[in-house]
Image (cartoon, rainbow, N blue to C red):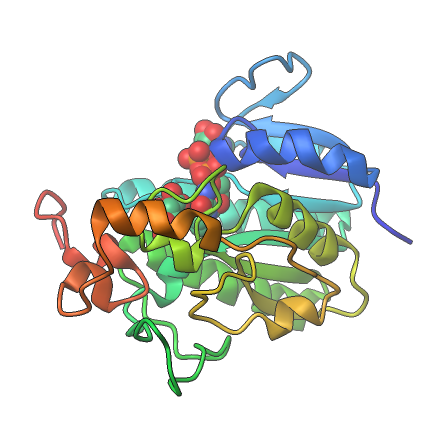
Length: 271
Ligand code: NAI
Ligand code: 15L
């Protein structure tokens, strides 16, 4: 049966706010969880992922979890460790203890950020496959790589299913030439999360999360196998963005790799 009650972690964030608007039309009842209060939703649970009692109560009786909570950019290792690594472990433990059968995990392109990006136009260069070796570009990307492995472990050991979605860039509109390749329109994001929440027999499946962009870099076939059908393409935004920013210069490290500027090692972080 299709899941109905979905715990949405990270409900106060950018993507959480978009999904709070879009997912109810698919028939979900969303239970909201975030360490920050959720605007306009006083019923939301305000707690840290590492508050195990609160998290366990939050997942109790849910049909699935859409796990968006965490630090969403590079940060000092200790912060990533607490929110993304320990926090995601805490989520899986709560899910295991409460018998929730399915998680959809917000992984990121930064789990494979040091993968060289195909040229534009791509010519004969293949799309990046979903089983490309992971090459995190930051502690942040490393935490997403950890989350994917954790999902695999909880499937193999405990039979909890996960779809790990390596999200490109999900914002209302693409705002850079890089995002023309990675953009996932919010409506396509809702389509993909819905497919990931409902497809049968996913075990642990990893997919890339983006619209069917003309400038796509990666292979969407594992997402399509879940039933995802993108209806959007960033190309209508291309002329304006290319006029403002120029075509990406692939000799610039910011454009040489999937992870973009995450690969340029901001000097303020102690790498
Ligand atoms: P965001 O930073 O706007 O939202 C993340 C939310 O998680 C925030 O509301 C924050 O308060 C909450 N949070 C952080 N630490 C927490 C903790 N310890 N306990 C409970 N809640 C905590 O990020 P955004 O853009 O909404 O992304 C959502 C998820 O999707 C993140 O995991 C991010 O890494 C992932 N993602 C997003 C992409 C995008 O394009 N928006 C691209 C790739 C991945
Ligand atoms: C991410 O993983 C971030 O959470 C998001 O804010 C964007 O920076 C996105 O990747 C991106 O690569 O554009």
